[in-house]
Image (cartoon, rainbow, N blue to C red; front, side):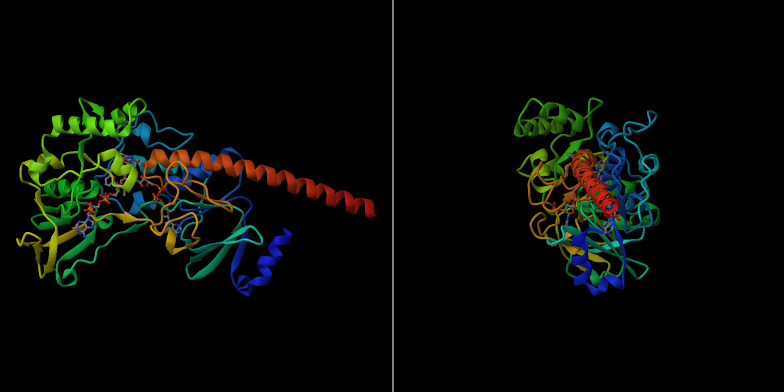
Length: 421
Ligand SMILES: Cc1cc2nc3c(=O)[nH]c(=O)nc-3n(C[C@H](O)[C@H](O)[C@H](O)COP(=O)(O)OP(=O)(O)OC[C@H]3O[C@@H](n4cnc5c(N)ncnc54)[C@H](O)[C@@H]3O)c2cc1C
Ligand SMILES: NC(=O)C1=CN([C@@H]2O[C@H](COP(=O)(O)OP(=O)(O)OC[C@H]3O[C@@H](n4cnc5c(N)ncnc54)[C@H](OP(=O)(O)O)[C@@H]3O)[C@@H](O)[C@H]2O)C=CC1
Ligand SMILES: O=C(O)C(=O)Cc1c[nH]c2ccccc12
């Protein structure tokens, strides 16, 4: 055993109570697209790894916490993971079911077998030994993994944001977060308040209309709505192509002109635009523009009722900041997600309090002491794919160097033993 590990064992009696594993290679926390992509790239280089996943399946965000009608909203070439493209017969915008099928076959193809139902409780770096200690709990049993490299792949959407709005506890009707919403079927005939107007709020409002419910959607500040396509071509793709030649601010201006030509003036319908352009806002604050797939039409027709911010809830009612009171049967909180990294990673240099790396893109993938982050660049699946490639290359090189050194030491020891006989 590596001498430095004795130091770890000496200082912690607890370790003997827990089941512990010395991992040859990195531990990857999270088996979503980011964790799977990193694992696949490591597999290609022959580097062993362990993937820890709190759920009982891969891609739990997609399998457990998204609604039925969900489709990828960027064209498929921007959503595939490294080294294995989507099947050719997939449509331009794969459905959630197709995306999950792809991820399952991706994990099988690269022989990625995560340890399921293992929620990472803490991870800390031991300076003296240069090892990470990753503690998990599974069915009340504690496990510990000791490794040289730690890859954080728990995602930008690890936990739901549930705002504390006055009176919500007294509301009396059903209150769910968007991550629990599957379909509008059970809301048929009901008046539903959708809080939030990001992609979730907009798409759930459309789904509610399609199931004969009456949604009112809260827009408390501002939102950029862009058409998903312009003259049959993906708006996102157009923006990516233009950014090769033009500065971001200029592409933003062109996007807003295109949006105005296709959608008209959205402010007329209560959808005030932010003062910062859509791509700059995504890059600087992580706020994703809405790619419209039919919500705007339903807003224009009045099927989706746009309302301002909330003052307070009372029994089966909401009071808005303009003093208006609405009778409602249910509330869907489409109020977004957050990272959970600060709750388990005991580290203060690399990650901010908000659970995202401190260093701006493209520097936020590698920290000190063998720490890595994949999927935190606010660039969706394509951002996660490029992080994964970089991280696997970096770890691959270090792992190969260390493995060669260990082999040399082993051979030297063997020679010494032989010469002593
Ligand atoms: C509704 C929705 C639609 C989206 N659509 C698109 C799209 O079309 N295109 C696009 O590019 N992006 C899209 N995104 C962005 C999304 O972030 C990515 O699609 C993708 O899921 C990110 O992958 P990830 O692996 O980084 O995170 P996740 O998919 O969230 O995976 C993280 C995994 O880590 C696990 N985990 C978390 N904490 C722990 C812990 N403490 N211990 C162990 N395991 C843990 C989770 O259970 C989860 O399985 C969408 C997001 C949402 C919410
Ligand atoms: N088809 C697809 O591919 C889809 C992709 N997604 C992606 O998932 C990610 C998360 O999206 P989403 O779930 O929409 O979350 P977002 O973070 O994008 O949006 C949250 C919304 O909730 C509002 N909000 C938060 N708190 C309150 C409050 N107290 N009162 C009123 N409004 C509030 C925010 O308003 P404010 O701006 O004022 O803070 C904002 O409008 C995004 O990256 C998105 O693109 C989501 C759905 C579908
Ligand atoms: O859907 C998401 O959450 C994404 O992050 C995808 C995405 C990455 N960059 C963008 C820019 C504009 C719209 C969506 C995205």
